[in-house]
Image (cartoon, rainbow, N blue to C red; front, side, top):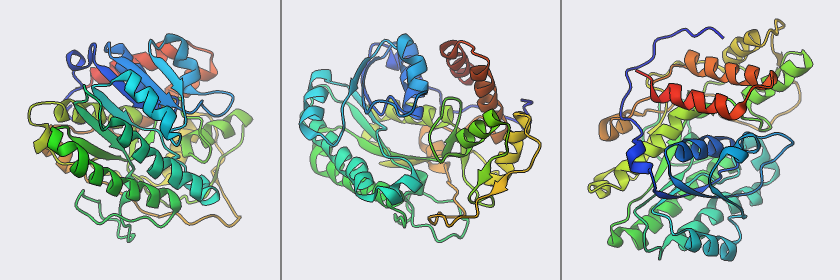
Length: 365
């Protein structure tokens, strides 16, 4: 796919020296974003313990990468407090990166109680297990760009905006933010251990095979030679490549674990450097064209659960406090994503491919 658009100047970088030999607990390592994080951390020499449910579906990025990942992989439900506590204690991590979640909006309408249990109770179970860890230096709990009370104004949200959430997924993530803040203040602050949250934009990238997500839906349609069916083609989102958000998390953790970690904000947005305001329909058109589908996307005619039409993040605070800023514009993120799926379709070495995209991101300028 041809790359257009100018990349932003790279900001603060992930530091391999910090992660080499570091004991890291990564929850959700079997998921799309978690598998990218696991590979990047392993590449840098981190000693990773992953805790997650087994990956869903017949094919997954984690399944492709697992033979090449030198990590301890534990399939544990974070809602099982006793099993989780035992595993966390055995890992004795210095750094905790919590990504495990029920992350699908439409599924949250079907499985509301399960979504709250995974996203709120599961996070609390993890925080409880972390309370007496002897080596812990910092923890980062990943929530969502959807934690804000969205009035559909189209204004980019900043970290001080009110939290909210109409759908069960968004509400569960907003509730998670409140729980993490309480635990950070009540149980970790006096020990000098920063516990923070991160809110990232809509991530895209190779290896996402989840249901009800735009790029995987387009890829599945392309395998059948048909156009994709869209639910909300005019909706706008803060699109960014998965490596942008993961790099933000890792840079944030580096600083949280440093001597001035307690002076950092306790929540940060990670989103595009400049909002490009691309709609779902525009993204679909570009990706379908790259896959050789010429027919326009169709429109879902059945009644759909409501979703917010406009969502944007202001990542200025991350730039000011961490020096972090997104480097890949939407065009580059889409090109990297389409190239990954094309290589996957061709039977290429997925580990080598995914690693090469991490190396390309590290070398961005």
